[in-house]
Amino acid sequence: MKKRNVYLDHAATTPTDARVVREMKPFFTERFGNPSSFHSAGLNAKNAISRARITIANFIGAHEDEIIFTSGGTESDNLAVIGIPETKFHRDAIKVATGKEIPHVITSGIEHHAVLEPLLAYQKKGKIHLTVLPVDRYGRVSVSELKQSLRPETLLVSIMSANNEIGTIQPIEEIGRAILRWRKSENSPYPLFHTDACQSAGYQKLSVEKMHADLLTFSGSKIYGPKGVGVLYVRRGVRLTPRAIGGGQEKNLRSGTENVPAIVGLAKAVEIVERLREKDSYGLLRLRDMLAEGLLRIPKTILNGHPTERLPNSVNISFMDIEGEAAVLYLDAEGIMTSTGSACASVSLDPSHVIIATGLSYEAAHGSIRFTLGRETTEKEIQYVVKVMPGVVERLREMSPVNLDMKYFSREQESESLEKNII
Image 1 (tube, one colour):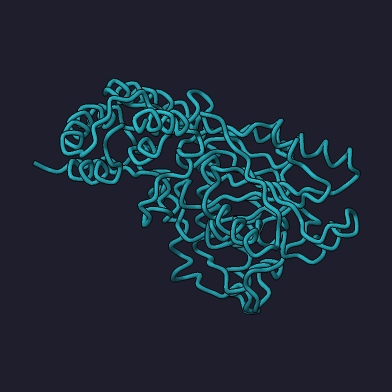
Image 2 (cartoon, one colour; image 1 turned 90 degrees about the vertical axis):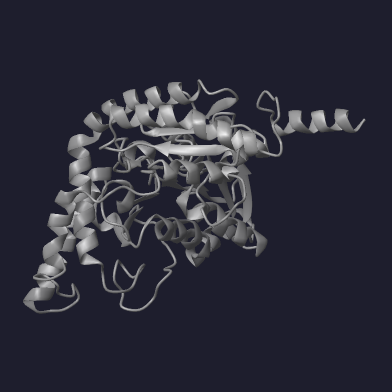
Protein backbone atom coordinates (compact mmCIF):
# COMPACT_ATOMS: atom_id res chain seq x y z
CA MET A 1 0.00 0.00 0.00
CA LYS A 2 1.28 3.44 -0.90
CA LYS A 3 2.27 5.49 2.12
CA ARG A 4 0.11 8.54 2.75
CA ASN A 5 1.73 11.94 2.47
CA VAL A 6 -0.13 14.40 4.69
CA TYR A 7 1.88 17.60 5.08
CA LEU A 8 0.70 19.73 8.01
CA ASP A 9 3.78 21.84 8.63
CA HIS A 10 3.07 24.88 6.45
CA ALA A 11 4.15 27.28 9.20
CA ALA A 12 7.66 25.86 8.77
CA THR A 13 7.58 26.14 5.00
CA THR A 14 5.17 25.90 2.11
CA PRO A 15 5.70 24.11 -1.21
CA THR A 16 6.74 26.50 -3.95
CA ASP A 17 3.78 27.14 -6.23
CA ALA A 18 4.32 25.76 -9.76
CA ARG A 19 3.46 29.19 -11.20
CA VAL A 20 6.22 30.71 -9.07
CA VAL A 21 8.73 28.14 -10.31
CA ARG A 22 7.81 28.91 -13.94
CA GLU A 23 8.32 32.63 -13.30
CA MET A 24 11.73 32.01 -11.75
CA LYS A 25 13.12 29.54 -14.26
CA PRO A 26 14.34 31.95 -16.98
CA PHE A 27 16.40 33.88 -14.43
CA PHE A 28 18.54 30.83 -13.76
CA THR A 29 19.46 30.32 -17.43
CA GLU A 30 18.35 32.76 -20.12
CA ARG A 31 18.18 35.95 -18.02
CA PHE A 32 21.04 35.28 -15.66
CA GLY A 33 22.69 38.72 -15.67
CA ASN A 34 24.06 40.51 -12.62
CA PRO A 35 21.76 43.50 -11.83
CA SER A 36 24.83 45.67 -11.17
CA SER A 37 26.26 45.12 -14.66
CA PHE A 38 25.84 47.89 -17.26
CA HIS A 39 25.15 45.65 -20.27
CA SER A 40 21.73 44.53 -21.46
CA ALA A 41 21.76 41.26 -19.52
CA GLY A 42 22.40 43.16 -16.32
CA LEU A 43 19.74 45.74 -17.17
CA ASN A 44 17.17 43.00 -17.75
CA ALA A 45 17.89 41.57 -14.30
CA LYS A 46 17.77 45.03 -12.71
CA ASN A 47 14.42 45.77 -14.33
CA ALA A 48 13.03 42.45 -13.07
CA ILE A 49 14.01 43.40 -9.51
CA SER A 50 12.43 46.84 -9.94
CA ARG A 51 9.14 45.30 -11.08
CA ALA A 52 9.21 42.86 -8.17
CA ARG A 53 9.89 45.70 -5.74
CA ILE A 54 6.82 47.58 -7.00
CA THR A 55 4.62 44.47 -6.70
CA ILE A 56 5.75 43.82 -3.14
CA ALA A 57 5.42 47.46 -2.13
CA ASN A 58 1.82 47.46 -3.36
CA PHE A 59 1.19 44.26 -1.38
CA ILE A 60 1.77 46.07 1.92
CA GLY A 61 0.80 49.60 0.88
CA ALA A 62 4.36 50.93 0.82
CA HIS A 63 6.62 52.86 -1.58
CA GLU A 64 8.99 50.83 -3.74
CA ASP A 65 12.07 52.52 -2.24
CA GLU A 66 10.99 51.26 1.20
CA ILE A 67 11.45 47.58 0.22
CA ILE A 68 14.73 45.85 1.12
CA PHE A 69 15.32 42.30 -0.14
CA THR A 70 17.06 39.87 2.22
CA SER A 71 17.74 36.15 2.53
CA GLY A 72 14.60 35.54 4.61
CA GLY A 73 12.64 36.34 7.74
CA THR A 74 15.53 35.85 10.15
CA GLU A 75 17.83 38.26 8.35
CA SER A 76 15.03 40.80 8.01
CA ASP A 77 14.19 40.55 11.73
CA ASN A 78 17.87 40.84 12.67
CA LEU A 79 18.38 43.82 10.40
CA ALA A 80 15.46 45.58 12.09
CA VAL A 81 16.00 44.82 15.77
CA ILE A 82 19.80 45.08 15.67
CA GLY A 83 20.04 47.71 12.95
CA ILE A 84 17.96 50.27 14.86
CA PRO A 85 19.79 50.15 18.24
CA GLU A 86 23.15 50.01 16.41
CA THR A 87 22.50 53.23 14.49
CA LYS A 88 24.37 56.18 15.96
CA PHE A 89 21.76 58.63 14.70
CA HIS A 90 19.04 56.98 16.81
CA ARG A 91 21.21 56.51 19.89
CA ASP A 92 22.30 60.14 19.77
CA ALA A 93 18.72 61.34 19.31
CA ILE A 94 17.59 59.39 22.39
CA LYS A 95 20.55 60.70 24.40
CA VAL A 96 19.92 64.34 23.45
CA ALA A 97 16.18 64.10 24.17
CA THR A 98 16.37 62.15 27.45
CA GLY A 99 19.95 62.21 28.71
CA LYS A 100 19.92 58.38 28.68
CA GLU A 101 23.01 56.66 27.32
CA ILE A 102 21.31 53.31 26.76
CA PRO A 103 18.08 53.09 24.72
CA HIS A 104 15.07 51.02 25.74
CA VAL A 105 13.43 48.32 23.60
CA ILE A 106 10.11 46.52 24.09
CA THR A 107 9.17 43.09 22.72
CA SER A 108 6.99 40.16 23.82
CA GLY A 109 7.73 36.79 25.34
CA ILE A 110 6.40 34.86 22.34
CA GLU A 111 8.42 36.48 19.55
CA HIS A 112 10.34 34.38 17.05
CA HIS A 113 13.91 33.58 18.10
CA ALA A 114 15.09 35.83 15.26
CA VAL A 115 13.78 38.77 17.30
CA LEU A 116 14.19 37.55 20.89
CA GLU A 117 17.72 36.13 20.68
CA PRO A 118 19.49 39.22 19.28
CA LEU A 119 17.62 41.51 21.69
CA LEU A 120 18.52 39.35 24.68
CA ALA A 121 22.14 39.28 23.48
CA TYR A 122 22.19 43.07 23.19
CA GLN A 123 20.69 43.40 26.66
CA LYS A 124 23.40 41.11 28.05
CA LYS A 125 26.07 43.26 26.38
CA GLY A 126 24.58 46.36 28.01
CA LYS A 127 23.66 47.96 24.67
CA ILE A 128 19.92 48.18 25.41
CA HIS A 129 17.49 47.98 28.30
CA LEU A 130 14.90 45.38 27.33
CA THR A 131 11.30 44.91 28.44
CA VAL A 132 9.82 41.54 27.50
CA LEU A 133 6.05 41.86 27.77
CA PRO A 134 4.08 38.90 29.13
CA VAL A 135 1.13 37.47 27.22
CA ASP A 136 -2.20 36.13 28.45
CA ARG A 137 -3.31 32.50 28.43
CA TYR A 138 -4.12 32.80 24.71
CA GLY A 139 -0.80 34.37 23.75
CA ARG A 140 -2.09 37.93 23.33
CA VAL A 141 -0.12 41.03 24.28
CA SER A 142 -1.95 43.56 26.46
CA VAL A 143 -2.01 46.95 24.76
CA SER A 144 -2.44 48.66 28.13
CA GLU A 145 0.66 46.90 29.51
CA LEU A 146 2.60 47.94 26.43
CA LYS A 147 1.55 51.57 26.91
CA GLN A 148 2.59 51.42 30.58
CA SER A 149 6.01 50.11 29.52
CA LEU A 150 6.77 53.01 27.18
CA ARG A 151 9.47 55.44 28.33
CA PRO A 152 10.92 58.61 26.84
CA GLU A 153 14.05 56.61 25.94
CA THR A 154 12.09 53.76 24.28
CA LEU A 155 13.68 53.46 20.85
CA LEU A 156 11.97 50.39 19.37
CA VAL A 157 8.91 48.18 19.87
CA SER A 158 8.87 44.81 18.09
CA ILE A 159 5.66 42.75 18.28
CA MET A 160 4.81 40.01 15.76
CA SER A 161 1.48 40.19 13.94
CA ALA A 162 0.70 36.47 14.35
CA ASN A 163 2.57 33.78 16.23
CA ASN A 164 4.34 31.03 14.33
CA GLU A 165 3.66 28.32 16.93
CA ILE A 166 0.13 28.88 18.24
CA GLY A 167 -1.26 31.12 15.48
CA THR A 168 -2.55 33.82 17.83
CA ILE A 169 -3.17 37.12 16.04
CA GLN A 170 -1.99 40.22 17.89
CA PRO A 171 -3.93 43.53 17.95
CA ILE A 172 -1.26 45.11 15.76
CA GLU A 173 -3.28 48.07 14.50
CA GLU A 174 -4.27 48.95 18.06
CA ILE A 175 -0.63 48.65 19.16
CA GLY A 176 0.44 50.86 16.27
CA ARG A 177 -2.14 53.50 17.21
CA ALA A 178 -1.02 53.44 20.83
CA ILE A 179 2.59 54.01 19.79
CA LEU A 180 1.56 56.82 17.45
CA ARG A 181 -0.39 58.55 20.24
CA TRP A 182 2.63 58.24 22.53
CA ARG A 183 4.86 59.86 19.93
CA LYS A 184 2.45 62.76 19.55
CA SER A 185 2.13 63.24 23.30
CA GLU A 186 5.91 63.21 23.71
CA ASN A 187 6.53 65.20 20.53
CA SER A 188 9.02 62.50 19.54
CA PRO A 189 9.66 60.28 16.50
CA TYR A 190 10.23 57.35 18.89
CA PRO A 191 9.65 54.56 19.51
CA LEU A 192 9.89 53.03 16.06
CA PHE A 193 7.56 50.08 15.52
CA HIS A 194 8.58 46.77 13.93
CA THR A 195 6.31 43.79 13.29
CA ASP A 196 7.22 40.31 12.08
CA ALA A 197 4.45 39.40 9.61
CA CYS A 198 5.99 36.19 8.24
CA GLN A 199 3.07 33.98 9.31
CA SER A 200 0.26 36.44 8.63
CA ALA A 201 1.33 37.57 5.14
CA GLY A 202 -0.57 34.74 3.45
CA TYR A 203 -3.82 35.22 5.37
CA GLN A 204 -4.17 38.84 6.45
CA LYS A 205 -4.29 42.01 4.39
CA LEU A 206 -1.14 43.87 5.37
CA SER A 207 -1.18 47.66 5.43
CA VAL A 208 1.84 49.40 6.93
CA GLU A 209 -0.27 52.58 7.06
CA LYS A 210 -3.04 51.02 9.15
CA MET A 211 -0.49 49.26 11.34
CA HIS A 212 1.53 52.47 11.71
CA ALA A 213 4.54 50.23 11.20
CA ASP A 214 8.00 51.67 10.58
CA LEU A 215 9.50 48.26 9.80
CA LEU A 216 7.83 45.02 8.70
CA THR A 217 9.18 41.57 7.93
CA PHE A 218 7.91 38.73 5.75
CA SER A 219 9.43 35.91 3.69
CA GLY A 220 8.83 33.83 0.59
CA SER A 221 8.87 30.38 2.15
CA LYS A 222 5.66 30.97 4.13
CA ILE A 223 3.55 32.11 1.16
CA TYR A 224 4.29 29.42 -1.46
CA GLY A 225 7.30 31.34 -2.72
CA PRO A 226 10.95 30.26 -2.82
CA LYS A 227 13.11 29.76 0.25
CA GLY A 228 16.06 32.05 0.84
CA VAL A 229 14.33 35.35 0.13
CA GLY A 230 12.63 37.82 2.43
CA VAL A 231 11.58 41.44 2.74
CA LEU A 232 12.19 44.18 5.24
CA TYR A 233 9.97 47.20 4.81
CA VAL A 234 11.74 50.32 6.13
CA ARG A 235 9.70 53.51 6.25
CA ARG A 236 11.23 56.51 4.51
CA GLY A 237 13.47 58.44 6.89
CA VAL A 238 14.23 55.47 9.18
CA ARG A 239 17.96 54.83 9.39
CA LEU A 240 19.54 51.42 9.86
CA THR A 241 23.05 50.13 10.41
CA PRO A 242 23.80 47.58 7.64
CA ARG A 243 24.59 43.97 8.50
CA ALA A 244 26.51 43.26 5.25
CA ILE A 245 28.91 45.80 3.75
CA GLY A 246 30.45 45.67 0.30
CA GLY A 247 28.84 46.40 -3.02
CA GLY A 248 26.16 48.80 -1.82
CA GLN A 249 23.14 46.85 -3.01
CA GLU A 250 19.72 47.35 -1.38
CA LYS A 251 20.38 50.97 -0.41
CA ASN A 252 23.70 49.97 1.17
CA LEU A 253 21.84 47.94 3.80
CA ARG A 254 22.43 44.49 2.36
CA SER A 255 25.41 44.30 0.05
CA GLY A 256 25.88 41.35 -2.27
CA THR A 257 24.62 40.27 -5.67
CA GLU A 258 20.84 40.03 -5.52
CA ASN A 259 19.11 36.66 -5.70
CA VAL A 260 17.16 37.61 -8.83
CA PRO A 261 15.26 34.32 -9.36
CA ALA A 262 14.10 34.28 -5.75
CA ILE A 263 13.08 37.94 -5.79
CA VAL A 264 11.08 37.42 -9.00
CA GLY A 265 9.51 34.30 -7.45
CA LEU A 266 8.57 36.17 -4.30
CA ALA A 267 6.77 38.83 -6.33
CA LYS A 268 4.82 36.13 -8.18
CA ALA A 269 3.90 34.44 -4.91
CA VAL A 270 2.61 37.78 -3.61
CA GLU A 271 0.43 38.22 -6.72
CA ILE A 272 -1.09 34.77 -6.15
CA VAL A 273 -1.70 35.44 -2.45
CA GLU A 274 -3.57 38.62 -3.33
CA ARG A 275 -5.92 36.64 -5.58
CA LEU A 276 -6.39 33.60 -3.33
CA ARG A 277 -6.20 35.01 0.22
CA GLU A 278 -9.94 35.06 0.93
CA LYS A 279 -10.57 31.72 -0.73
CA ASP A 280 -7.65 30.06 1.08
CA SER A 281 -8.67 31.47 4.46
CA TYR A 282 -12.34 30.52 4.12
CA GLY A 283 -11.56 26.92 3.16
CA LEU A 284 -8.90 26.50 5.83
CA LEU A 285 -11.10 27.79 8.65
CA ARG A 286 -13.49 24.88 8.24
CA LEU A 287 -10.70 22.30 8.09
CA ARG A 288 -8.84 23.92 10.99
CA ASP A 289 -11.89 23.72 13.25
CA MET A 290 -12.63 20.17 12.13
CA LEU A 291 -9.10 19.13 13.09
CA ALA A 292 -9.17 20.94 16.44
CA GLU A 293 -12.54 19.46 17.41
CA GLY A 294 -11.41 15.97 16.47
CA LEU A 295 -8.14 16.12 18.38
CA LEU A 296 -9.69 17.68 21.49
CA ARG A 297 -11.85 14.56 21.87
CA ILE A 298 -8.69 12.82 23.03
CA PRO A 299 -8.58 12.91 26.86
CA LYS A 300 -6.19 15.33 28.57
CA THR A 301 -5.66 17.67 25.65
CA ILE A 302 -5.81 21.44 25.44
CA LEU A 303 -5.90 23.91 22.56
CA ASN A 304 -3.08 26.43 22.63
CA GLY A 305 -3.56 29.93 21.29
CA HIS A 306 -6.63 32.11 21.00
CA PRO A 307 -9.82 30.18 20.12
CA THR A 308 -10.96 32.73 17.50
CA GLU A 309 -8.24 35.37 16.99
CA ARG A 310 -6.03 32.80 15.33
CA LEU A 311 -4.65 32.17 11.87
CA PRO A 312 -7.03 30.08 9.75
CA ASN A 313 -4.47 27.34 9.19
CA SER A 314 -3.10 26.86 12.71
CA VAL A 315 -3.91 24.22 15.35
CA ASN A 316 -1.58 23.71 18.32
CA ILE A 317 -2.57 21.05 20.84
CA SER A 318 -0.89 19.98 24.08
CA PHE A 319 -1.24 16.22 24.68
CA MET A 320 -0.46 15.60 28.33
CA ASP A 321 1.88 12.79 29.39
CA ILE A 322 3.66 12.45 26.06
CA GLU A 323 6.75 13.91 24.42
CA GLY A 324 5.93 15.96 21.36
CA GLU A 325 9.11 14.92 19.54
CA ALA A 326 8.18 11.24 19.89
CA ALA A 327 4.68 11.95 18.61
CA VAL A 328 6.08 13.73 15.57
CA LEU A 329 8.17 10.64 14.73
CA TYR A 330 5.23 8.28 15.21
CA LEU A 331 3.03 10.47 13.03
CA ASP A 332 5.71 10.63 10.36
CA ALA A 333 5.72 6.83 10.28
CA GLU A 334 2.01 7.08 9.48
CA GLY A 335 2.69 9.58 6.68
CA ILE A 336 1.68 12.67 8.67
CA MET A 337 4.20 15.53 8.88
CA THR A 338 3.86 17.97 11.77
CA SER A 339 6.17 19.74 14.21
CA THR A 340 6.53 20.58 17.89
CA GLY A 341 6.93 24.31 17.28
CA SER A 342 9.22 26.61 15.34
CA ALA A 343 11.23 24.77 12.69
CA CYS A 344 14.15 27.11 13.40
CA ALA A 345 14.31 25.78 16.96
CA SER A 346 13.91 22.08 16.08
CA VAL A 347 17.53 21.27 16.98
CA SER A 348 16.73 22.16 20.59
CA LEU A 349 14.87 19.85 22.97
CA ASP A 350 13.95 22.77 25.23
CA PRO A 351 10.20 23.21 25.74
CA SER A 352 8.45 25.81 23.61
CA HIS A 353 9.07 29.29 25.01
CA VAL A 354 5.73 30.29 23.49
CA ILE A 355 3.69 27.67 25.39
CA ILE A 356 5.58 28.45 28.60
CA ALA A 357 4.87 32.17 28.11
CA THR A 358 1.11 31.44 28.06
CA GLY A 359 1.41 30.06 31.60
CA LEU A 360 1.14 26.33 30.94
CA SER A 361 3.43 23.78 32.57
CA TYR A 362 6.64 22.40 31.12
CA GLU A 363 4.84 19.08 30.59
CA ALA A 364 2.22 20.82 28.48
CA ALA A 365 4.94 22.55 26.48
CA HIS A 366 6.83 19.30 25.90
CA GLY A 367 3.62 17.61 24.73
CA SER A 368 2.56 20.32 22.30
CA ILE A 369 2.24 19.61 18.58
CA ARG A 370 1.71 22.19 15.85
CA PHE A 371 -0.51 21.26 12.90
CA THR A 372 -0.49 23.93 10.18
CA LEU A 373 -2.65 23.42 7.12
CA GLY A 374 -2.13 24.66 3.61
CA ARG A 375 -3.71 25.38 0.26
CA GLU A 376 -3.75 21.70 -0.79
CA THR A 377 -4.95 20.22 2.53
CA THR A 378 -8.09 18.11 2.09
CA GLU A 379 -10.93 17.01 4.35
CA LYS A 380 -9.87 13.36 3.88
CA GLU A 381 -6.41 14.21 5.19
CA ILE A 382 -7.90 15.87 8.26
CA GLN A 383 -10.12 12.85 8.87
CA TYR A 384 -7.07 10.60 8.58
CA VAL A 385 -5.13 12.61 11.18
CA VAL A 386 -8.10 12.58 13.57
CA LYS A 387 -8.28 8.79 13.14
CA VAL A 388 -4.55 8.13 13.64
CA MET A 389 -3.75 10.53 16.48
CA PRO A 390 -5.62 8.79 19.36
CA GLY A 391 -3.64 5.60 18.79
CA VAL A 392 -0.34 7.46 18.73
CA VAL A 393 -1.16 9.24 21.98
CA GLU A 394 -2.31 6.02 23.65
CA ARG A 395 0.91 4.18 22.71
CA LEU A 396 3.11 7.02 23.95
CA ARG A 397 1.19 7.36 27.20
CA GLU A 398 1.62 3.65 27.85
CA MET A 399 5.38 4.11 27.50
CA SER A 400 5.49 7.33 29.53
CA PRO A 401 7.32 7.01 32.90
CA VAL A 402 4.95 9.61 34.32
CA ASN A 403 1.23 9.41 33.63
CA LEU A 404 -0.36 12.25 35.55
CA ASP A 405 -4.06 12.70 36.15
CA MET A 406 -3.94 16.45 35.93
CA LYS A 407 -6.10 19.34 34.80
CA TYR A 408 -3.48 21.09 32.69
CA PHE A 409 -1.61 22.65 35.58
CA SER A 410 -0.14 26.07 35.16
CA ARG A 411 3.38 26.42 36.52
CA GLU A 412 1.98 28.10 39.67
CA GLN A 413 -0.53 25.31 40.26
CA GLU A 414 2.15 22.72 39.61
CA SER A 415 4.44 24.36 42.17
CA GLU A 416 1.67 24.44 44.78
CA SER A 417 0.95 20.74 44.16
CA LEU A 418 4.61 19.80 44.55
CA GLU A 419 4.87 21.75 47.81
CA LYS A 420 1.83 19.91 49.21
CA ASN A 421 3.33 16.58 48.22
CA ILE A 422 6.64 17.44 49.85
CA ILE A 423 4.86 18.47 53.07
